[in-house]
Image (cartoon, rainbow, N blue to C red; front, side):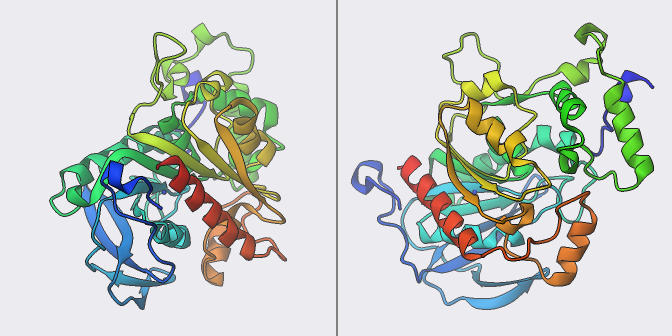
Length: 366
């Protein structure tokens, strides 16, 4: 099997110091409504959530019922921005409860639907989208900075990012961490059984799984000089001349939170160099991304990274707003293991974790 075929190329989100910073005052009140609007950035659909005084109403957005005020006028003042990077094949709906929690802290929230890796199109899910996602986040910030409506309402010198699952790649890359395809292959050669939910993602049949394993095995023991250049190329944080230099590809990113992140592919050396605050939420019974190999990898090597919560009894998708039952079954069918909600999980833990995320970003982005 040729080495260039190892991996298929198209598979695998309270403002303080208001007087000094010129920002809007305290966090929005708990009963502040959530406004919702959309914009396009180079064809990328972006959902915006923000504090508003308008009266919300419950409306259907895909399979989700959301209580929002569509195209309402934002509350006055300049606010910090948080971008939410969704998981593989995701959308804005499952993260809307988190977006609302961030709005109640006074943030404006932007949720891009990553190109080729969202609920309506997963053709680039995996490394192709991993590499592109951070640039899409930066493009959204650029577009908002140039937007006549939003530029005067946003303070974009310090921006937050939240990443869930594959969105963890977005967040870690923007924090300055680096990954390459060889790291993914090495991880799966060592942990394909334990971390099968990640390494064999999308390989549903025994034949597909055998083919995926064979691609990994083709690289076992091969010297780096024998591997194709794309497997050795680094992605994410910037290459810098000195260890002390800022590795962030976009210096506006000042804080990151991660929920059940894809993280095993990042080098330990690059995680050590992260110099901005990063908060991590894990799920105790996550079978899609084994916590000790992903969240644990981040916390073991990144000195600026802290554990915000480990949700007891939670599976991978329990951190998201629950899908309607038929959608949950459909989502689970695409997972090798651990796709359904965990019985007995207390959703109050999810609400508490969302509050921890919002509070962490509030404090970090003062």
